[in-house]
Image (cartoon, protein in one colour):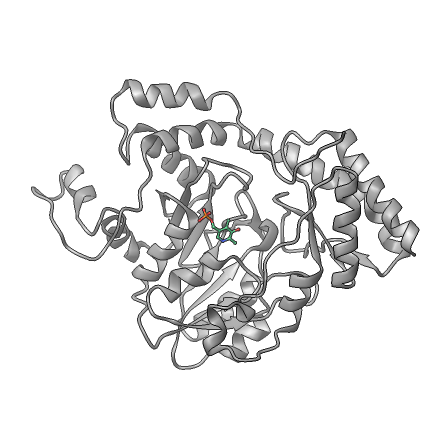
Length: 380
Ligand SMILES: *Cc1c(COP(=O)(O)O)cnc(C)c1O
């Protein structure tokens, strides 16, 4: 029986070697040899002013919220169509969340919406590069800069992706990446904060080290270390970094394999998409690169999507839907009574993600898109 999972974490084989090395040097806590190698890799390859590994993207977002001094009464604009962590990091600081809609033709936040929602209380704008595809950053940065409002890029899905040649995560004040096992480059659980404004670097190191100036101490800048700020334990063990470093060495291979899978889906479904209005292929804006994090379709209704997922399941293919608009969640309903955020709600109901992972074979991709073709042909 065919059984194609939605995701399958890929290990290159070198992870275990590097973890053994981390154990051999007897330095298992954070900021060891492999953490340094990862930081150097990211700063060199993408030009981030500072890269700091964290235990998750969620943690990186929480660090950003602390660094921006978000407090009760502050308004933070976030997309409604996103993962809870994008919003939670700011809710934890007491912020009032202001939910923005997605664009008509892709799930990223709409700059026009951002402009409409800004008030004198707006203290941060959070954008999510959905599926690793860049938001319209020139438009967003122009709106934010005119009002002096910092932008945080939730780049959880956006490794090795670009906006007009600029690496995602390098454009806003901060970027937050994820190395969760469902992302392109993984460490089981893991993340990274990128800092693009030097003024925040020192404090970021302190917040990441439980509010102490331990990092300065180890560089010999102070002769003892102590408690200087709020903070938490945001740094990962060096064994996590060792796993991650093996992945980074294979980044180009992983990316080219995933891009080939993505392109096969796209090519396999293009002809069908031209003959029906019952689903749409993803649209990649000209300014964006596709990093092949995800392949999704947008159906014309929740019924079509439900039927398609069930049809594929019968053929052993696990396709899944994605986010549920946050403005309709049980938690946020207290301050978002009866809002309608149309594009976000449409993606909530109609978007379906297809299996996407390194080891997905070309013949499996063909099997999946042929099943999709059969489904739509049958029901036209
Ligand atoms: C995966 C993801 C996160 C959370 O990442 P973790 O590393 O699991 O904390 C946050 N935001 C978005 C958009 C994500 O896709």
